[in-house]
Length: 248
Ligand code: GLP
Image 1 (cartoon, protein in one colour):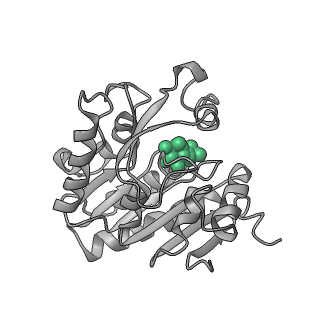
Image 2: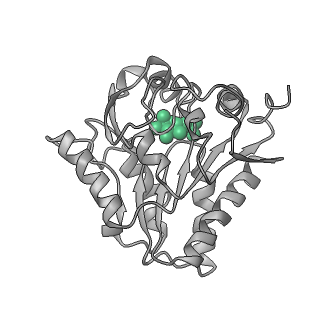
């Protein structure tokens, strides 16, 4: 498949973050009641810093709703490595978002299937996601949709692969692989593809292979990010290191 994905390469990761935040700001200005999809991980942290700067310059988030991609199963929302805690710390508490407009899947629910179905309904009830910010795993995963995740997958409970457990316990988040939950709740590929605009961020050499597979490889569940190739409005914002395998 010839990809429709737009690719912008920037000299530094800071410029990637500025470009991502500006895209988000454009949506918020055009539609103050917009719905943003958000991601966790190291990559979007700088973008969240830029969003906070834009808020201090007057950007209003008071009517914006947010939905996060995923959450670890079994972690309480106030566990420091939960994605809810990550978002509160890095973004939510710094903006004028209303708490009831921020949505992160509940990793400790007794009824995960209901939680996942309700999440899909909440997204629909708010009119769908206007822009979903994404990262990419070293194995090409998006959110916690690991290789093999179906194109039409919806929000659900998934098992994490050993490579994702290792990547998330390299000292940045969890100190030890045994501390990383073995499963998670995640928006599906089908859920993510329904967003009106997708913006995927990748920085650093470690992401170069996954980025090349996503953009130049087959449209295949073997590389979940490649399943964005036919999206009508998808942009990859990359630094030079993450883009380094695209030229060959
Ligand atoms: C986790 C998250 C993904 C994220 C990925 C890459 O697995 N569930 O949503 O894209 O990590 O994270 P990082 O930006 O830290 O490399």
